[in-house]
Length: 124
Image (cartoon, rainbow, N blue to C red; front, side, top):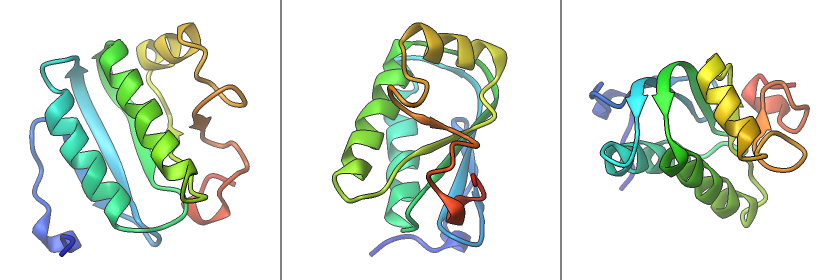
């Protein structure tokens, strides 16, 4: 049974904010291998909600390492197998730089909003 919007509580990793379709996971603070399990749990809740284009907001990320990029790539790959896509909204300068270094900016990898792939996410 998937959680409803009211079942989700903020935690140190992020805050799940409901939107019209699916949800937006707002990730806050510093993230590395020590927070990847909690972020994995939050991303699972987000993707269970449905919607063609779940959104991860990285605007308030102050630091993230390659383990987080790997998690985003795995999540996106799983969604692509269902004809869905993970949308990254407003990556902070440090998050954007790491995504660029890992060559994960569309069309090579993740859909950075606006990418035009998802009208129902607000990304179009």
